[in-house]
Image (cartoon, rainbow, N blue to C red; front, side):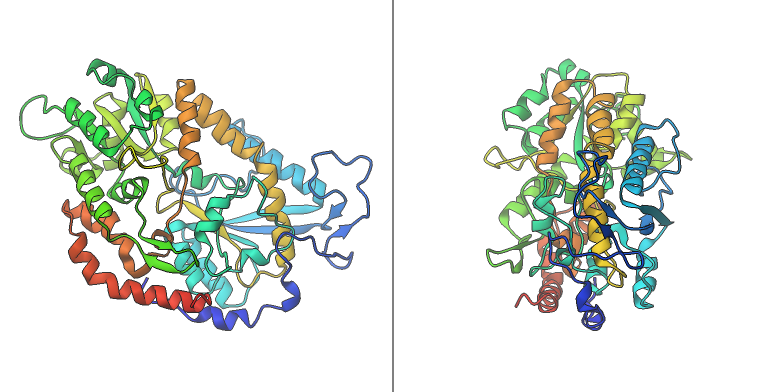
Length: 491
């Protein structure tokens, strides 16, 4: 992100003051136009689980801008379903939406775009109120907020962020100066399925005398050093040709170069953090980060492990990522570091006992296991030019509350934890992983492009060039932080 724009200052002046409700409060409503009609008491026929009994929005449409799912798991699947298809998540989305629409007199609509960022920019800058909500990649939504395109979610009426279906940790991490422009909740599935985990070939671990590695994780001893020792114990150049390819045995098959960033965060490092007063400071250039990167590069040494790009010359015409993934699915790698969504493929393609493990700690002294959604995980925000923020707050609250036992339960509890894992302990490991879900404001905003150092430059060079790269970008990052804090009144 080159510079933080000043566009927000102009747009904020255009927001009608009457449109801003008090966070967590229910505004008074009227029966004019398409505003909600609210009775003084719930109808006798109202179901006991109705969050706002008696509220009727008289046919109002809630319009969502979504990321087109051009490749499986790259876009939204939790927003809209046209009808029953027999696919569990689709049907859960359809039933949830149908109940909300019938209960509150609303219509849920969505627009898919391959690049929703461009559509959001065009919409807001033309002062168009076409969308009530927008889903955008984690790696770009910070820039969109910095350009002044997002409404402060803490000004939304109806929303109660203290409720369990809102992600308190995400709200705390992503808020700046009392402003919150994007977040997640139980309404969203995409950030969960893009969260990083480690999957282990349990049969291989036993065959190589490594035992049950979930015991190690339960004891708090699942560290980067322990994981490296396991990789070194199993990796073999089977035909001794000096080339690690599909007919060899790997310690780890990674998802992509960004794995370095995912591992550094799991080891308790952040690019940018907030102090006790909420002010931003660069936190990435530490002895711990330097040592973490050294350990991760050891983990991905070409003699034991591989990213998909390492295998390009062997993949032929096959999709490079499929070629790499099939090494694990075929039983020739001990670990794969991937998004949670890969469990679905494991359940279809693995003929061995695979087990879920968290991303490793830096050392045993680290308090908890941590993970983060990757760069193309989606977060949601309300466009600045939204016509009725109160309605948006209402819909976000009811959708978030309703999703816990419908769409989220279908995807996570019934899918990931039951259909797509083989054992109860792996299901419990997934809960441990989700309990450690975290966000790095430096990763999201890519301040000074520091994120690129650990997610691209270092892994592509396979060299710990953090000192040189940090010196190159530090002033730029400090300038971006200063501008961001000025913009959000955090000086």
